[in-house]
Length: 377
Image (cartoon, rainbow, N blue to C red; front, side, top):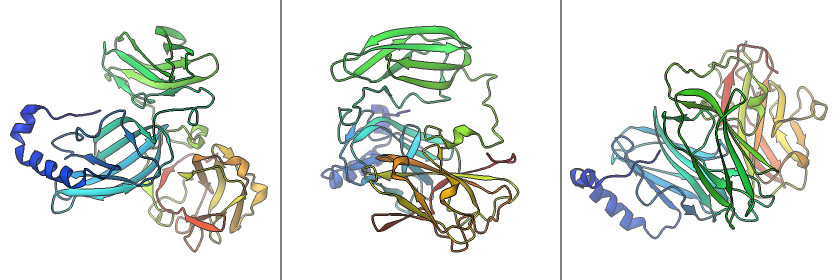
């Protein structure tokens, strides 16, 4: 969802435009600077558009304007997972600024700026360049970030599907519901692997599944709804296996610090998720350092259960084999005991860190949390 200012809006909002112009003049030389405008009255700056390329290994500086006191969540997202985020409050000068963590060359990403129920989105951002043989050596299917699980389309709206695959590969795209194909298309990827098709819009209904295949790899988008009337998302009340998978979208779950969980019920199992990024795959065993008398029952790494024989009930140091990890984002998911002490989920010291190459990375903050009234896995 991208909102561009019209000329009429520029004329009526000349003061805001002038202020933004002066601001751009000061920071135009900063290559990694990204701007978002006032959430309540305008969209992203014209300098920040779908498909843009940002420099790799440089912090992403994002700033803009908004009503004083407004709280914004700024998220950089890849494969439906938040890889870096920050929360900021607009200051008395109607200005806000955050810095997100640097990223290695990859993509596509989304940038979301969220204020309560309003969200501004920029799609298909690439870090360090477009998809290349380093990012996609096996010719996997990479879809545009405009496509996501549980997305909504208007009845009759063209279904635009695009992305990357192996150069010159043939792809079949199908829109399916209850094993019935409603529309389909075939396309050949260009020499750089890029492809795009537009399929005819459909009448209201759903949920639909979008299947994209090149014969070797498949990519699926689930839960597509066309027309929102009388179609409701299922209510989830228990911890499911999909919650432990890297491709599960947990962006609607609240963020929490693992030593600040006192308000959560102790008779309901807790699931927490967080991504840990590595510039390159660790070559040696890493270690999680939990506090004494922690309340963690199970740990999953990239959807795989960490062998509970490698750590004891009260263990302070938990070894993680390097084979469970890879370069880029790695999902760490932890499930509490069925009845747990919410004053010391990660132990009496309230510390949780990762040790690698004699360096400690603090992990206690910014976890997605979910409470279940059902028994945990």
